[in-house]
Length: 97
Image (cartoon, rainbow, N blue to C red; front, top):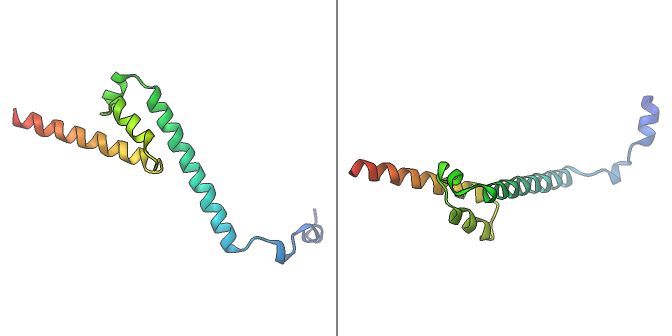
């Protein structure tokens, strides 16, 4: 396709998305992808056995609690924090023995 043909097929400037529209669209797509990845991760955690969850420092109750909360955007970070705190408390308890 020649340059003239591609220019003829191009949208007029008035119908092209502006920078702000592109930015909003990119943010919407990014948020959707993050939501979908989080949802997939929570589903995978829900399918894990108790022993597998214990291996990564979580319980079934931890996963269920985070799933039921309204803000699932930070669910994976919250689960990571729970596991970290549980591991930290176990180390501190072992020092006291």
